[in-house]
Length: 133
Image (cartoon, rainbow, N blue to C red; front, side):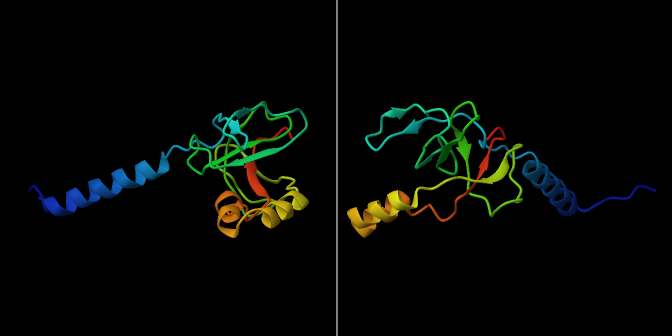
C-alpha cells in the first residue's frame, strides 16, 4: 500500500520550510566596517577616545555608522531599545554620549525640515556597539 500526498500540500510544506530556513540564516551587515563622513561628505578618521555617530551611511542597511572607543574603527550599527537589550552579530546594546547642546544649536540654526532630515533618526542614545568601550 502506497500513500500519495496531494502535490499542493507537499509544495506548501517545502515552501514553508525553505522560508523558515532563509529567515534563520538571514545575514546582517551589523558590525561590518563603514566610513564616517563629515558634513561635506569627506571621510572622517575617528580620533581615539571619541564616539562618532554617522546617520545616512549608504554602506549600512540601517544607514547608521558608529565608531566607539576601543572598537578598532567605524562599523555598521542600529538603534536598540536600552541597557540590556539584545543586539545581533555579537554586539551589545550600549548608550553613546550625544552632545545635547550641539543638537540644540543645530535645531536652532537649521530650518525644521533640514534638521529633521539630518537628525530625525536620533530618537535614542542606545545603539548596538562592539565591546571594548
